[in-house]
Image (tube, rainbow, N blue to C red; front, side, top):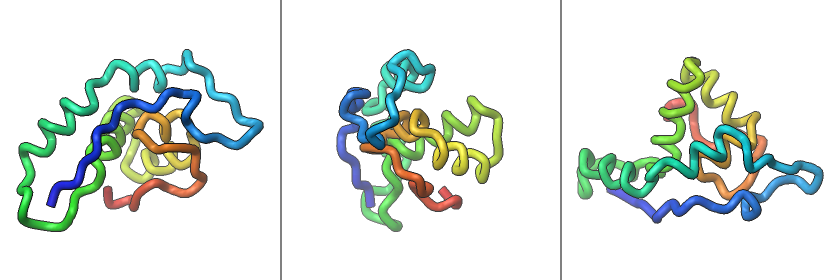
Length: 109
């Protein structure tokens, strides 16, 4: 089963952070997120999946973003999850609405 909402990039201003945390719009992950055609990638990703069979998939933006982070940083699956958990820029990159200190998804993602 496929569930997807358009992932038009939030503005950096709209990303919820603790009051004392200010994010830099010049950060490499912020810049990269603006360059990626998320909706087009999600559409291509969904074409490979069954719309009727199986469990609902994870959000395409998160799946695609995690894969990009993993390969750009050249780290393991577990380290990718830890990097995302600790870094608000990576959370912004994968389309979360705000910073959260817990991992966004299970390590099995």
